[in-house]
Amino acid sequence: MKKMILFAAAFFSLLSASAQLSKADLRNLDAYFAEALIEWNVPGMAVAIVQDGQVIFEKGYGLKDVNTAEAVDANTLFAVASNTKSMTAAALAILVDEKKIGWDDKVQKYLPWFELYDPYVSDNLTIRDLLCHRSGLATFSGDLIWYGSDHSREEVLRRARHLEPKYGFREHYGYQNIMFLAAGEIIPVVTGQSWEDFVSERILTPLKMDNTLYSIKQFKAETNLAAPHNEVNGNNVAIEWVNWDNIAPAGAMISSVHDWSKWIEVQLGKGVYQGDTLWSSAQSHEMWSVQTPEAVSQGSLDLWPTQTFKGYGLGWELMNMHGSKVVAHGGGYDGMISRTVMVPGMKAGIVVLTNSLTSLSYAATYKWLDVLHGIDKGEDWSSLFLDFSKSREENKTRQRAIAEEARVTGTSPSLDLEKYAGTYRDKIYGDLKIRVIGDQLAFQFVHTSLFRGSLRHWHYDTFQLNWGTQMMLPSGTVQFTLSPDATVKGVAIDVPNPDFDFTELNFEKVD
Image (cartoon, rainbow, N blue to C red; front, side):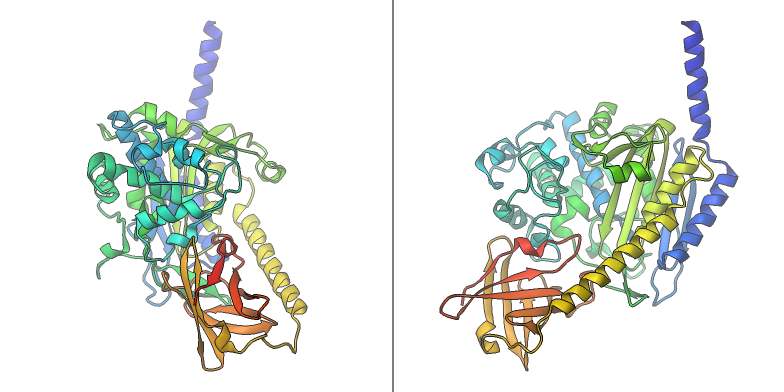
């Protein structure tokens, strides 16, 4: 027995030692990050690394904005987007500790008007269900209700009842922003404070995260701010920030690596920061326990042979790598991608913020995981993910070529353009207006000012949708459907992209 104890002590001593990144490790990581930034053609990035309760590395790379050429530093603000979900979960954990709510309380106890696709689901949906992506809805289903729209938070939640499920209730993982909005809206019911005020008072202030914002309305002229960027024909183009206030509990936070490292510190401290307890270790355990398991695919095993499980907790992704439990989350915003990764057993964490839509933040964090575990010559994640990215772009090019080849030339619309103009209504989203401008059609999603542009005839009663604003979405198609009497019945919209499912909208002509 004594030998076993000594062996265990030696083992854990060795494990702890492997977590101590040396100055040489940090220099190597620094060089890797700088080179990867160039390889990915990303304007700017910031990185912070936490170890044993201290920030041991924080640095900015590249530019905040290609137009101003100002350098990124550790205090430059980026959208952390869905990393916000972990903060909403922690806010609710505080209320669980205070016995004001329970993880398994029914949502309708607090939001009696909130309904989903089935009365049984509406009646039995719990706070826990909201936070672990098992509502039965598909990943990103309903995001067109809130994205860039003028729908209030309550209106977004009320419209969610029209969303069709993809899976059975609690049957399968389906990443859901709207469910996190519902979770955040429980806070004002229980506390009398808005989500923003509660998070500011109970989390941001104790952590001294003075440079972290929850709305673009808080921007000032002197704000040290990165601009989001899209890549257009190989060139980075700065785009406008989009207001996410109506989905704030799921993704509105804006922060710097200097500030976000404090969030990593309190997480690794299991709710304790510099002697101040924000929530109990029991709640950290709950948030870091798998609530919704996910299958480890053969593709994942090929990339990460040491990964034997993965799933989602309460506001956190969970998996294992190199024998360690990994707690992580990503964030995707218009023109910005971020990543937070922690190894609690090694008291270590990293945050990577970027101002472009690439997988650079993932490559950087996997490199850090390898170095943290003493793997000096592991996979070149930057090159590997860059190859994947190039393959995806090549596939998109092939798909566009296939669509072009399938186009039937020499056709005309069935009706005069004026017959297609009018108001179209979808019960999930709301209204779409189409009108004639000159010799072509123009469209406007009534509740989303960003969603406007032109419709160019493609073939028959199908038109190519071209956006009139600079954003991350590609062009798509609008297909008009006609009734037997040759009047326009409705439109079906398809914009191929990984984030917003336009095909779940069914617009019918109402005038």
